[in-house]
Each structure stands twice: as structure tokens, then as C-alpha cells.
Length: 250
Image (tube, rainbow, N blue to C red; front, top):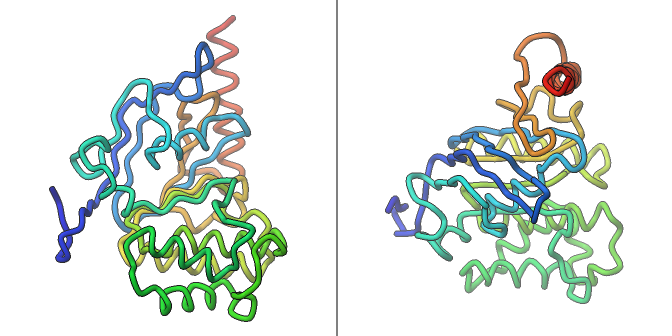
């Protein structure tokens, strides 16, 4: 098993091989394949209901695939258990914050959950990055959407995960916060982290992503490398896929 110097499980590559997920007769994912290596930021694009959140849930080990394999390094999740969870940072739509706790208490709870027995410095640094130092003693239930989003992003990154999975990370962020987080993502890439983010904010991530994967109706769609901005290429890819499906069904 790959390890760091501290003996904690580590990996440099994530491989998704023909993963499908069905809910009864509804197909959420169909034979999705992709890979991501350390030092890459990959965008997961697609319309609502395309399967982006389902795929992130599978990679976060919260949803079991119906078929296919997901390998962290060379090993599947079932052989790694909690060692893998400590190497994953996951932000979902729910944000996973406790409204009755303060901002500082939320971060301290998650830091201890990931094994940090003396998290005061880590929590203070996270509050500073989120621009919430002066609100660290306030309950999260009274925060604005943007404040909760900034705190949740720090919660997801608190334990310095190897693989970062983000579902619409820019939701609720103002222009300054977007700029701060884009810089943070660049720093994660420079540090050799793997980042997979689902987003509709194509103008924000254009120029940031190393690659993009398009999902439509649970399937991957080819995204051209040439032909304008990310938004233009995305629209062309979705239009081409729609035309191909119409022709095949004719």
C-alpha cells in the first residue's frame, strides 16, 4: 500500500473505469471513464441532472457504483476503509456544517474527526483564509450563504486531502471570494493535489482547468480542444452529442 513518510495511505492517481450507477430503471451514470493525476484540476461539466453530483458521490465513497471500478492509486475503496476517507476532501450541496455550532467549533469538530488532537492553529488559519476570524465565535446558523460557503470550503480542505472533490464550489461567493478560491485551487495544484470540480461557472474556470469532462444523461461527451472559449466548446460538445443521439434514434 502506498504510504507517506508518516505511514498514512497516499496515492498519486485516481482511475474511474466504466462506472455505471442505476437507481431502479433510472440511469444516473453509464460507463463513465476518466483519470486524474497529482497536480491536475479537472472540470466536470454538464446540465442539471447529467450525473455530476452522483459521480462525485461515488468518488467520495458515499455511493456504490452499480458496475465498473474506481481505483485510488492501484487499490479499490473497499480495501482502504477509513484510511482513504482521510485523504479525501469533499464539498457537496449540503455543505456539511452544523448550524447550532460556531464557525470555530465546526472546524474543530472536523479537524478532530480527521485525527488532529490539537487543532487550534489549523482552525485559526482556516478562519483567517475564510475571512471569518472575527466571526469564529458566532453560530453558523446566522451566517449568510456566502459566509457558509467560504467556511464549508475550508472545512473540506482542513485536513490537507490528496483528492479534492467540489460540487459547485463558487455558489454564493462574491467576486473577491471567487478570486481568493481560484488562487487557492492553483496552490493546491502546485502542491500536487488532485482536484475534480463540478461547476456551471464556466467563465470562472476557463483558463484554470487542465482538462474538462462533459457529462450528459450520465455519459461522457467529447470536448474539443480548439474552437474558442470553454463555454463555446462546451455548447458545441453538447449540441454535437444531441445531434448524434437524434440521428441514431431516427
